[in-house]
Length: 240
View 1 (cartoon, helix red, strand yellow):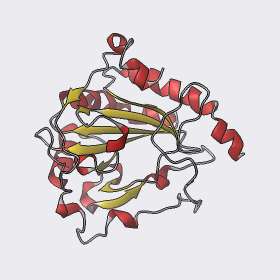
View 2: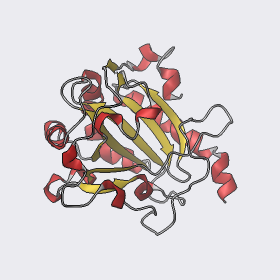
View 3: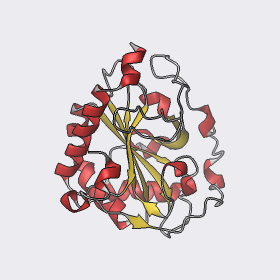
View 4: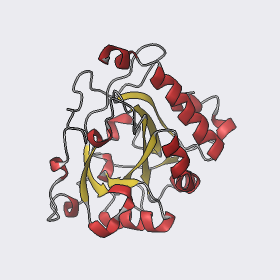
C-alpha cells in the first residue's frame, strides 16, 4: 500500500493523519546553518561510502505508479546530526551516503519530514523511536527532516532540531530543511508530516505522501509494502 493511497480510503485503518500549516516558500533559511564554521551542506558527498557516484538519470519528484517506475530522488544535501549525535555539532549530510546498490546495508531509505508544531508528527515519532533495531533488521534507515519550528509556517532552526532530538530521545539521523527548502516540491506545504520510501539500491521514489501512520503495525506494513515494491524495481533490473 502506498502512502498516497493510505491518505484516502485506508486512513481509518492505520490512523494516518496530518497537520496543516501556512508555510511560505519564500521564508529565508536560518543563516545560522548556512555557514557555522563546520562547512556548508554543499560539502556533503556525491558518492556513497564505497565511492560509487550517486545516480543522475531520471531525477524528479514522481513516485512509483503501478508498473511505471518512479523518479530517482535528487542527492539533496543538508546540515544535521548523523545518528542524532548532537555532541559533534552540525554535519553535512547527503542522500548519497545512503545509496547502496548492493542492498547489503540499506534496502529502504525512509524520510519523515516534520514540524515542531505538528502533533501528528510527534505522534508518529513517538511510535517509531523504539523501532530502530527492528527497522534496521529489515534494511530500513529512517531519516528525519525538520522543516518548521514551533509556530506553523516558521523555518526550523538548529535549536529546534536539538530540542526535537532531546524531547523524543530519537536515535535516528536528523537534519534541517528550513521552510521545506529542499523537499518542499514533494508535498503540499500546508500539510505535515510527509513520508517517503526510497529504494536504496536505485534511489527510486517508491511511495510519497503527507500524513502519519501512528501505529507500529501500520509502520511495519508500510515498510513491508515498500520492500515488495523495491524487489520489483525495473530500475534495479536495468542496473544489473
